[in-house]
Image (tube, rainbow, N blue to C red; front, side, top):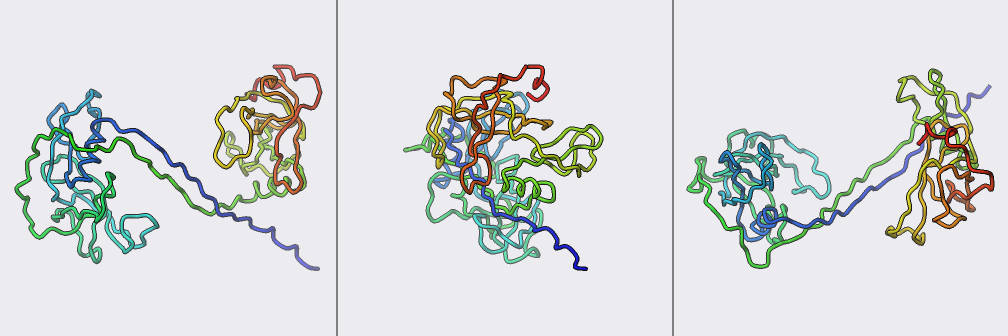
Length: 322
């Protein structure tokens, strides 16, 4: 007798990225413009402490603060951790130390990289200095990294000096590139869910304790903390519990606006899932609308949901799923 083959372990590379564009207030604008000009600025709090990098509101009183000061470009390591395997886009391509450095004249420490040959070359209390990037544009990366300083004593810049924060052609906005690359493996429960979708079925799992059917399944009930092994096919029809009208076109999404995105409680499911509503004018979508999935040829999941033509569900039938 031949033993059954183990189920295929699903894996897929996923990328989550969000380029966040933000405008800068006077404090952050001065700080980043200062880095472009080779100057490190901090801000003085209500109790006289100098914070570097500067913040716009006092961490104790919550009052707005704008008293900028220039601090030194040398400082002292307050703590550190060795990074033996740098990741893409980190400050240095070779192994380095992450360090917290209290610059001369500052009362707080800033995080950055320290370029040293190995962990034996780092210690708390060591003196370091800024290594400026060859090309600077007004970003924290204008500090390429820190490097060991030649002197072991605090220099002439031990005291912060007032600064107007005024520069020519100040930096007024930045784009923060947030990106996460990872490999996702769905596990037993969601593998069954994905396999079901390939057959145009929606598979959930029932909690043996509270009997709620989770779709997509999670492998365990988050309320009862027990495994959910009883698989249940739900739907295909369901009820719109709530919805929103989308008026802004998303990048790389070939859907004309406005359109409706809804929470849909499939028949037999214990919670609602997300889905787009089509086949009906956007201003006619409503809570309680009965819908069914529409699959495209070769699609891995429903393209959208459309009205079934049934009477609307009574509110009491889905109020617990909103």
